[in-house]
Length: 388
View 1 (tube, helix red, strand yellow):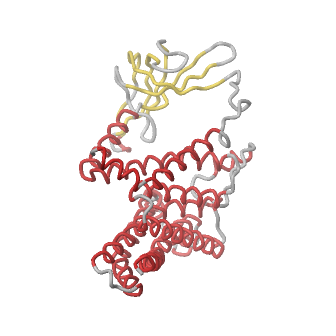
View 2 (cartoon, rainbow, N blue to C red; view 1 turned 120 degrees about the vertical axis):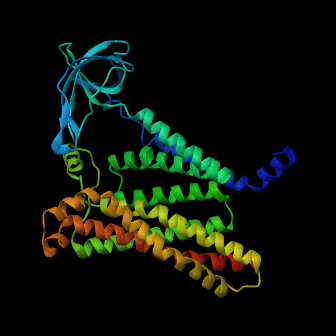
View 3 (cartoon, rainbow, N blue to C red; view 1 turned 180 degrees about the vertical axis):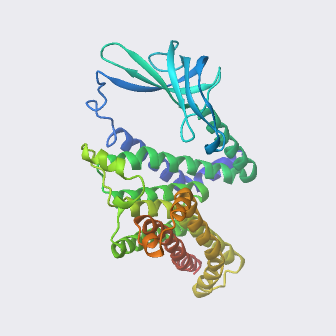
C-alpha cells in the first residue's frame, strides 16, 4: 500500500482503529487489575505437583498388550526413564511409570515426547508418572494448517477473521473464565463478554461502518433473546446449571470457597453457543442489505426489510440444523449409551440430560432465528435513514 493510500485509509478508519485500541487496552487493564494473581494464592505448599515436558530416554519394562474387548487398544504398564525438558528439574533424568488403558494413556517408545506429573515432597523425595503423551506439537500443526488454509482462501478477510478468532479465545480463557472463578455474576458477565467479542470482531472485519453497527446491534438483540428464552425454558423445566454435565467438580470447587455461580451456567453456555451463529446471520443480513441498497438506492425501508427477510429465511433451515447437530454431536457418546439402556420414553425425555440438550439447542436456535428480523429491521431503518 502506497503512503498516500495508507494515509487515506488511516484517516478513514481512525474511529475503527481507536475502538480496537481501546478494546485491547480494556482487555489488558482487566487482566492486570481485576484478575491480577493473589500472591497468597500462589504460595507454594510443602508438597506440590508440577506438570512438565519430557522425552522418553529408555523403556525399562513393558507389560502392555492389545485388549480384544477394546478393539485392540493397549492395556498395561511401562517403567521408563525420561529427560525433563522444562521446569525446575530441566535436564534431569527421572524414573517414571506409564499406565495405559483403553480410556487413558498410550504405549510409549524411546524418543516420544510426554508430559510428566512430578510430585515433590517435603522430605525431598521426587516421584514422576506419565500424565499423557505430549500432543502440543500435533495441535500446533493442526492449528497452523487451519491458519494457512484460512489465509490462502480468505486472503485479507481471512487474516482479519483470524485476528477476531484469537481475540475471542483470549477473552473466553483469560477474561470470562477467571472472572467467573472470582465470583462475577454468571449471566451478566457472559453476556457482556460476548458483546465485547462481537464488537471487536465486527470492527476488525468491516470497520466501524453502517453495516458493522447493524450487525453488532442485531447480534446483541439475537443473543439477548436466546438468553431470555433459555431462562424461560429452564424455569418451565425446573432445571438449571446444577444439572449440566460434569458440574460436580465445580460444585466441589465451590465448596472449597471458590465463589463461582453454577446455576447460571446452563444459560451462559447457551449464550456462548448462540453467539457464533447469531454473528454469522447478523453480518450476512446487514451486508446483503447494504449491497441491495447500493444497487437500488430508491428502495424504501419496507422493501429493504422484506429483502432482508427473504434472505434470512434461506438461512433458517441450514443454520438451525447446524446448531442442533452441534449440540447432539457434542453428546453423541452419551446418547448412544442412553439408547443402549433401553429407557422408556418418559424416563428418557424427563431426564435432566434430555432437558438440558433440548433447551440448549432450541434456545440457541431461537436467538439465531430472531436475529434475522431484528437485524433486517435495524439495517433497513439505519440504511434508509442515512439515504434520505
